[in-house]
Length: 242
Image (cartoon, rainbow, N blue to C red; front, side):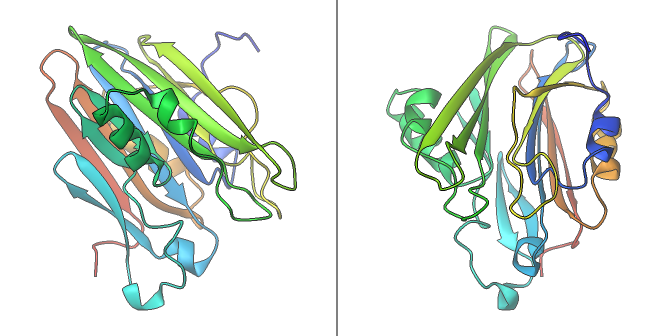
């Protein structure tokens, strides 16, 4: 496979029953939109008891049924926040860390150097993060993954990737390479994936190809790079918030 080959997004998702949590950022083929998407999957009742709720430009995860929550520490957070000309997307409360550091004039990298993988031994779930920066009718983006250095969680390895937008191309990072016990951590660089011009088609491609038993929620955002106006789509397996 060529390093420049682009994976079909639907086929790539369908080939893995458990990506865990995933971020895709990229550009539509017509170069009009910056695309950001985030999805969550879950195996336990606690993980599956969640919904995405949109408030302005931010997304927050809430329990679908609060009476069934056994531990909210790693499942309830705001995965999407905006600060000035930057959109932050992550799989945990490091969203707030990045936001706070950017507010102080520091960088995405500065913020994530203070964080590490999740303390959910033996999985040591990676923290994945992304950020889009809009400027002068164009955009660039970053992705990061913070992973345990070994099976005992003795240290944290931090990886950062910087991208120039490229028509019809996105990059996909997720927490796990597949199902297992413990769950196998994502390895390698973020995967190159196809992006579609139409938000409904792209959102459906993602949602319909995630494993039907394990998928929980999906957020997709298309931002017009010229005007800054955006559209969003949210899918929740559990339906509306109780």
